[in-house]
Image 1 (cartoon, rainbow, N blue to C red):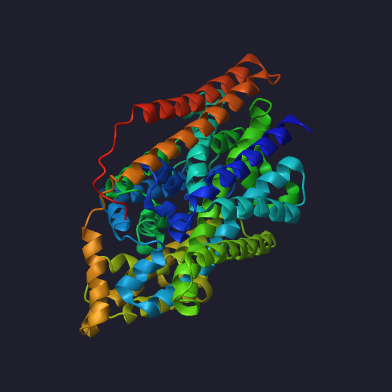
Image 2 (tube, rainbow, N blue to C red):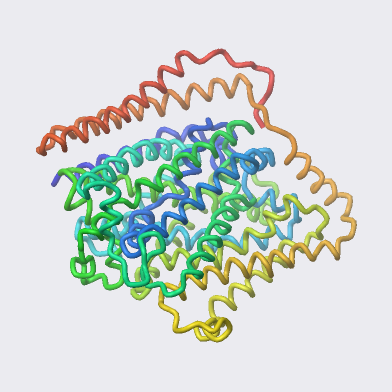
Length: 591
């Protein structure tokens, strides 16, 4: 067994252990799906950040950086802006809804019919996203260990599935924090090595290959700079809206109170903003070095660029780093995928099984069904990833952007606007989703490059320009047509029934009422979280530092030692903070 395989196996064991440790935290579906609304802000912030971070960052996004330079960083800048908006407004509001799953919020605001439509209408997006994440992870593991892609997808999918089903949301949140610290340390090290090897940031930018009409900022294969400019604006809208609508409120439902939710969003903003400057430097560096990934990985065709980051780690990092990097990539994917599994299963159980099939089900029964639902969703995601692998002609970046702008975006319109516009009929939500489906169909299957060229008197569009235009058309189409339709439903508003008026009133009352949580039970739970995570951090940091004994040059040994000490120090400080924590005020119970 080589050192890389040993490192990855050790990391797998650690992840499974986390699921086993946190299995006792799950006594009901609230615990299983949102950590009982009792997680500390730094754990919630880590999981909010990690849900936007997966193997796709190191495959599809890294490939886009290798091909076009800086534009991909603008998409992650949009994520940072979204988290900043969450800190300023949305995160606290989402926590204040006092719900277990996001669809319960949809039901309160728009009624049971809309809840069912969004439950079943949103599941395809969750499963497709999970398939994208798993496919990206399999790309990494398959090329590193020379394993068949189909086998890799199945095996890695099953590992993620076991961990998620065993530990529920507590295991997801706890592992996210541990993974966030490790992956940021590893990425900073890789970025620093790329900068040193490339002779500095300015040299990397200067050496990046551009065509006659391109630049490092706008990228290549682009004849019309205006298309790029509009694409940037649309990406900012897309990412901000996708991060801050009720169907994605799950990121903050586990926070122990409103202030914790705000702080979690601020942490996610800081991490995402810092990541813009470190994640893509290795891809820019190897592009500037003239590395031909299509020649290095000819068997993967157009998807060869997805291996940019892995190529850098294999060729420029010290021995053992590949295993640690793959473990980190696995961790980032697992955090996204198991959150998706947990969210999908939660929606099915709380919004379909309980109200429709088994209204009298006990919590024990619901917890069992939750684990079964998670398993089924996981198996479907594995099948989706296998299908995506068969799409040889599409690169991972464009698959992701298509899913985001045409499938996910229309589900966000009504849940976002419904938080601000009160007087709409209950049918406004599901009708808006239906209008959005029509818009997505037209953009995805009816609109052609020839249409755009004729309407705007343009020359022949490049492949990149057409891909960008589809994103632009999807976002603008939904903002104007789908969003406009929702606003227009206020013209058809009639007073609701007394029962529905009470639910809507409760929705907006909760939205405006902060959650304060200083109970004795929460104080004990805070200490328990810090104790377990602190010990896991110390263990992980020690193992990384121990990697300094791997035969390497002095700088390679120092890399492991310094990285391990950083992780160990974070764990130590966490334990010290736990011991110094003051006695909590026992006056307010958790909600």
